[in-house]
Image (tube, rainbow, N blue to C red; front, side, top):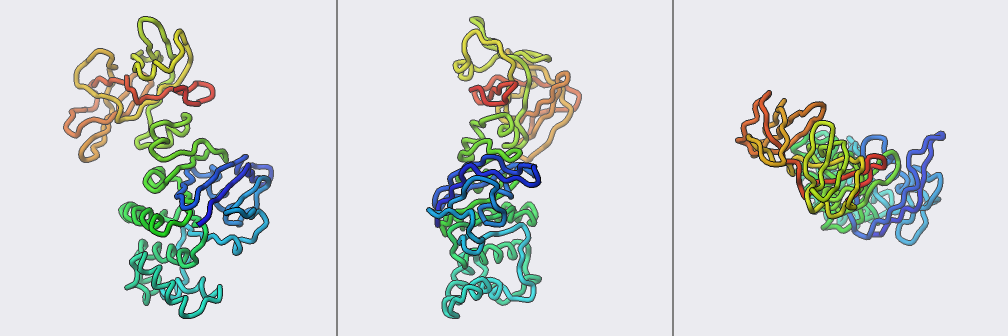
Length: 362
């Protein structure tokens, strides 16, 4: 395994920048997830590390070696794509053995390496089958196995679970995380699925329009987003955003929006300069809102227009004027469409973002 260092890398396609001044260090054995919406530059970044694209400017190091001009086959990386790319006429055994034959391994070493990879992936009983006889999850394991047998310094994975159904995707990502820790190979994983990023990553690197927004462990990204984009991209349902004005005074700190006003929690207010009156966006997640059937001090009246039963809980969707808010409530909470509920938005876990820069204020 090896560390990977991406230093001030920019990639431009026909005067259109896909990646802009991107810098990131990935430690030995780390599982780093590049996360972002389609077109944000995450796959382009991965392809530059692989050598399939050349940076317009900047440097990429694998270990201590500068690899900008190193051919992909000489970088000692293994890439797993969204498509399984298995040879349909070959057995699983021969698919796993193929990259080793190309590198002139001895027959004895090939058998030893293939059997070890099959054992790790728990596909030993599938070695004599052909890809058409395998399920989607089994095919994905074989594709991973073909990368494992090479024993590369770095695994590069470009949305490898996208072709699996939802249930199998959950199962496979748990297996993949355990597998990576067992092998210990540095891994860079690209996805647009924030659930995959949160469950797989040691650290998540979130991208938007070719620029890096935040790099941190999943729990930190969720609890302490660097800006409004990160806050809205991480979490399901998405964070509620309320535009308005922070008002601080001796009588108490409040957030005033067009529809209503409510107190700012003291834990947040302590970080706000006294006497401040500033336009901002208040962000709060569904699970941090307290929902009541009757009014309480500091609560805001919300008209219910829908609810989603999720088993042990439900998400209540409500409106006040032009503002829509989603809150989490117990499964047995009565939230009939057209009726009013009262939501307490004052939480120590809420967030404030600057109205202009969209950066976190506290």
